[in-house]
Amino acid sequence: MTIKPLSDRVVLKLMEAEETTKSGIILAGPAQEKPQIAEVIAVGPGGLVDGKEVAMTVKPGDKVITSQYSGTKVKLDSEEFTVVRVGDILATVE
Image (cartoon, rainbow, N blue to C red; front, side):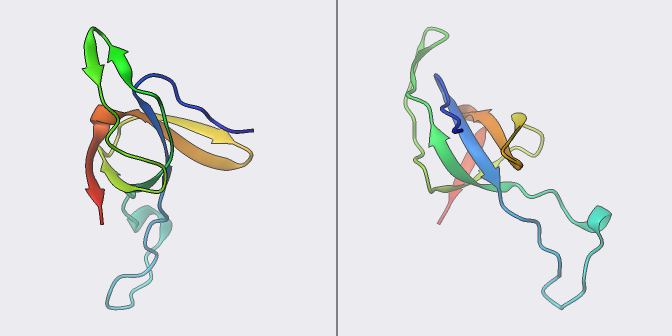
């Protein structure tokens, strides 16, 4: 199965949290920060949303930063994805 977003929605897959610090300290599960960097998996068509034209500024494969608690979590085939509005994407990572 695949997820095909509608309207101004974007499907993201969160990147794995770092398990060790730069100095080599291994972090326990609760001490790890929630990742905010994600990979774009699929992008909706954009268009007219709530009376405003929305242009999609990301494409599949882009790495992006999102708001920490934005979006809807979806589990599909034992993988977890997050569906967000394109406006919830704060920046791209190069």
